[in-house]
Length: 358
Image (cartoon, rainbow, N blue to C red):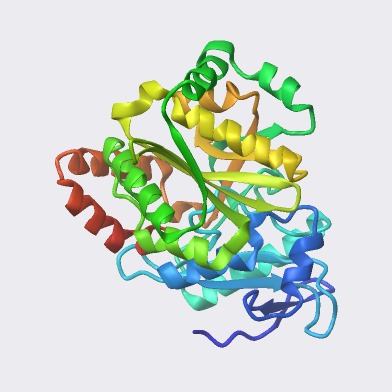
């Protein structure tokens, strides 16, 4: 673990570093800041640290004895395979800067760039919906995704009527007539059932699954803020989703299914269960997460629930360190290789590689 020291910048502010896992101000700050999400919480950060060894850090203009008023959160990713870099945040759909204005953000980004150079990190990365960085900044636009969210404030009846008639509503009704057993919670057996579905899904996508420990640690460190929903037929898991909650928002993060049973409509039923539970607990937004703009099928699925999409930008600096085109080519090559790899080898590969790709 590095020893961090405060540095003054070419601005009227001194920038300080803090550890969000130990600083007593962090939980309250995240709870009250309007731009904070479940990805800023200690549970998510601790799961990242324990599973992959990443170091969560934040920079702020607030002094150590002052209340926190702003922060830029990131993790240091150390890898002898892919190089050391700083990411806000690994395996996270989005992580908005917790700032009040562009001046604070520029001060914090300038400090982050200083840290990057002095520590020898390859690049810094940030994922946000705000298109507020320009050509003069250290971080430049690298990739743009779609980020979908569903407004849960209308009545359940109005929400239901807003779903696509044949692709969503009809499949929900179909699933309700099937001999499906529905289970939700955070038990170890439910985590294992859900993980088996993740492995099947990633195999269909020709990609290694995340390590089992990742899902185990999410449940262990996020507690009641995470929920697993699994549908079974004759005690065989056929579909599952993992959601998380923070403030007024519920977040869909992971899903898996057995393609042999897609005709049962279990996945739409699970989303409908999650929406009803969110409404009952007073949530106002369902975050469907980000999608690659090229993945039209996933985007259509989210839009059929009535979710609205906005651009989500991945910023990197220096931009020349990573080529998006090269990364897409590497992904295509990975899928070609994984298509012929046995399932057990895919699981083993996931355990080895994910800590290097965050």
